[in-house]
Image (cartoon, rainbow, N blue to C red):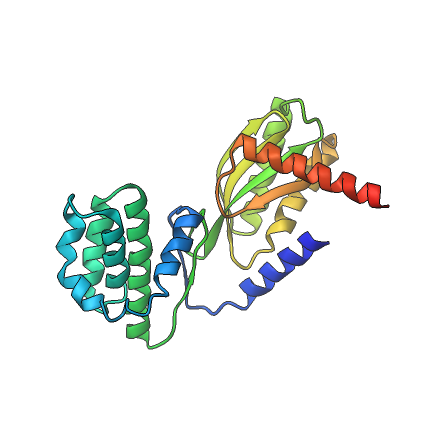
Length: 250
């Protein structure tokens, strides 16, 4: 029940989005995003924007520490000048690791600032750990097998993949990859924001189960990150434990 309410709230929020929104395309760790947005709350950021831009060469100096570079990037992101945007583009191309991710977030913010100035309207920015493209978000989905000890047969694997691709096409979705392991199958896909995500995969399960009932009704959907095998197994055990607790309460 709580899970259904969660999906309903998400769907309502997506339906209420204005047309002028942009999606962060790159996959950036959600913790990095949260730390970046904490930086954006600093009152002095706007005041330091021009001064930070004047000191932009520090970004390409190996002797300057990471925290200082993050501070400069975050301040330059709100400097309303195309030169700041081009400089951030250059930094993203030449950097790597955590600072590259930080630079991508600053670049996205700078892009939105310019768009807001040119169009004279506020822009909406959507970011998730897995990113997206255009008006589509990327999702990591795990289908759970009825037999938790066995890999799906070749026929079942082909059926699941074919049904998934068929269902995605109906909603202008994009299939990216699929992996099969003992007990579950995982996939990376993209779907438009206005699509009711859970029902898409429920349709896939229903179609597949007409040929042997080899998939569970439950599934895992996230747009935060690609889950490891250990994390998936932990979630499965957690779900089983919750169900057992519910049965005990009855």
